[in-house]
Length: 185
Image (cartoon, rainbow, N blue to C red):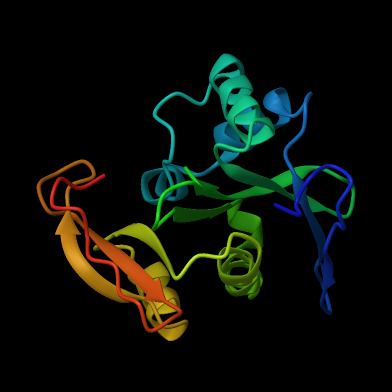
């Protein structure tokens, strides 16, 4: 996939922000669990890719990444602390779904947008996908507008916690258009 432990680690910086992105690796489970535990109640409500964020559950996340089932990346601050988690779940699917989560201190600085652009490039050029997807709660207006700004289109209403509380959104790269699975994800 080109994102293995020996790959290049992208580094980004701005006037007040420096961070890097690297694949999750053995030993990250504790720090990843700490990241999820440090999310505010609002952030945890909007960004909940895993019901269980215990260290044991995060070991499974790291294992799935190591085996290539998921593409799972740590977002690190200048001190090497995990301050975000970005990923594609089940990269073998025709339309893998991405996720972006950041600690609140890293919101409203353009980092989410930069990470989304990065994941779009990975989906298109590294994973070679024609279409990528995501799910967003309907009341997460900030994220919804970010995704629309980057070309994602709503394909259907889906249920996350409550009936039809979320949108499934896709970004199509090529002329070929996949259709949503009638059974949902």
